[in-house]
Length: 568
View 1 (cartoon, rainbow, N blue to C red):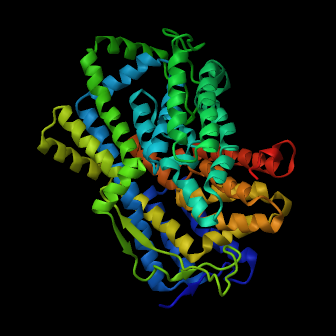
View 2 (tube, helix red, strand yellow; view 1 turned 180 degrees about the vertical axis):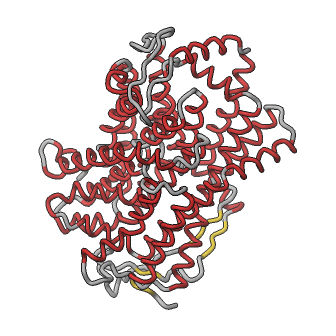
View 3 (cartoon, one colour; view 1 turned 60 degrees about the vertical axis):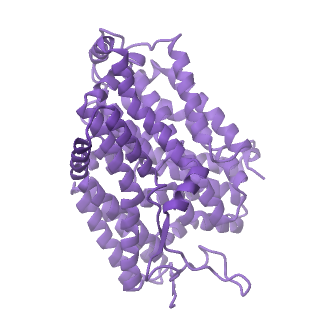
């Protein structure tokens, strides 16, 4: 088998090579945000640019480039597209039966203030789905619920994306940290603990931040007890579980703790401002969200009072089923059994063990330890996939709601038609990410950030942000840049554990701007075609929060007493 070695300076000029490597990202974001081209077309244009750069600038073999494109597209459709399709299917079933309106009214009566709803649903409830499943599930669920609670599409999409940050590093039962340990060789518990000494600060901040983004500063002050309660009840378990247990159950424990704490708080406290019967004025103009009129919350409460308890119970059944089955599907023992029944691993012809990374992205090879070629294996684990668990819950819920088999099948087809462009977009985005990864152009960008000397802790953190923004996955970013972070840390006298953890912690803030997540949000809110508005709304929040993580990591690297937080 003929191997191909990556070259991170193909034009023999660092500036020119970095500029060319950035072209796919620049073209993609410009097409979406500036030229407002439909996102599935923007994704295809970005993919075409990435392939052009890979073939003609980096000299990637045509066969390997084609195989990479198909590999990335397949991963986009499965498991990610599979999750979105089946989640929207469940949502459509509940809408057809009118049960989503009942659910909305039920939530409205429990937490009638929309600012508290943002905290409870987008942050706390979303974190549960992030911990159990990840891969776009929390954004899809929370955005769909918020839109039914009366939030505008931009609000539902943008707020769900902003809230889905602090839990991401421990998503899907700790998968990003486990992957980071695998590629760096660093101790799993140490990495888990180090991330747990970075993200809890942001778990405290995010509830305040997301309400501020939604309702403005004064609106946020009216619900500060709820934000503080939700953040503290999440941050403390996040720190403790990550340190003493490991990465597996961090989000599950922290999210349940946060939701329970809010429920207890609401028994003794009511928000200031935005009370029933009092109209709320728009806080900002244009696309920026404003508080919905409180009369809608009052109407929701009145409607809920006429719903029979059985009807409310039926409205919650699909989502309780979804939560239980998604969690069950994520349990390692269950996943192992399902994989033994159904999993098939397919080596991607023309790509598997063809590409070899070169220093400094990997350690210099030795006769005893040569550089291992990059694997390209597509795991067709159709039974153990999270999307399959969602599909099972949707079908069971459909029968419970009174649908017949033909009507369930018809609804599934309607859902597939509805999300067809979203699936194309996700496939193209993942193909683009895979092309940049296997061609080495992403590493060129990473190396440019790595050459920042004393400021490397800050810019190394932004490297994690860049990785997630490109790939849509904290796991993929850790696999991509984890080794580079540890090598550069050793060269600069920093802790490899600190910088590897910073890659994951900084990466979570890139989750809200990656095109895959934005498409998931726009699809869940039935706002496909407006991704440019979502991107413009969340971009500042993403960059600002990533910069704050970078500042924290810089302090942990050099400034006492923060240096004592570094896991030795």
